[in-house]
Amino acid sequence: MKQVNVGIIGAGRIGKLHAENLSLIPSIRLVGISDLYADAIQPWATALGFTQITHNYMDLIDNPDIEAIFVCSPTDTHKDVIIEAAKQKKHIFCEKPISFSLKDTEEILREVEQNKVKFQVGFNRRFDHNFKAVKKALLDGTIGELHSVKVTSRDPMAPPIDYVKGSGGLFMDMAIHDFDMLRFIVDSEVEEIYVRGACRIDPEIGKCGDIDTAISLVTFKNGVIGTVDNSRKAVYGYDQRIEVFGEHGGITTDNDTDNTLKVSTAAGVVSEKPKYFFLERYKDTYVDESILFIECILNDLEPEITGYDGLQAELLAHAANLSLKENRPVKISEVSKLYTNA
Image: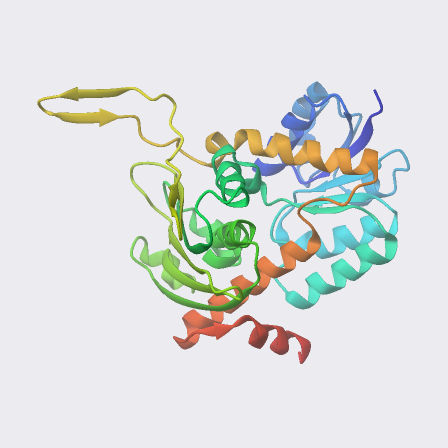
């Protein structure tokens, strides 16, 4: 079996997750991994089969044996990493967001296009078995013309304040997945977004200039109306649901649980809480997105989730921030013009 030689840049939580998943895929050969704490990860990385473990990501980019790079480092490093990798003709898988700056993202995408390398963004939720089933039902015409979509996305607990400070904010860090999911389900571009948000969970998040609770009203160019319900803390677990409604009825998805056991007594009806966090809920999606990326390299195909998708989700996140700041609906074209004139 032909294999693709892979390097991973960044060995934090998501980098380690990718590394462990990739080690199980026969069409992938793990070659190198870089991290500022390379010495600390050496035993773990060696056990997975990495032969190059380094502090300097350029060691991987300059390695002629490495064909593809997984960018799992902090977002503020993405621009330099991706541009250098593209110049060396490495295919690139990038965790979201591509960058915090629309200008930087546009520059990144130009470099990727000029060097004709594969580029896939890590919107893994498109691979979730529930959400794929919703998409298929819509394509099959099960409920006819789509009228509205509601995405519920709530974390089980607020992140540490140090994480919040470098996250890019709720819309860029968390809701960006949900904005991409809306585009995936509706299959149309967004016309306008209007956001209401607040700090209802942790006042320290507010002191960082961020929010922890938000409702986004999204209007699409094809007339569909969408909503995103975000919270940084759902005490019952990781709440990830979608509801779609159309001319012939509706479709809903429930949360995944560890089992479907339901106990009914005079005291009440009790069932399992949702899976606790994204590592449990979306475990298989990380494998599936990686397999698709490698297949695109081996078969010279265009990834299904491109840099364009990453850019559109970032536009929505920036528009959401502007809407929150100025307390008004914001058209996506307005944000595009602001970027163009910057």
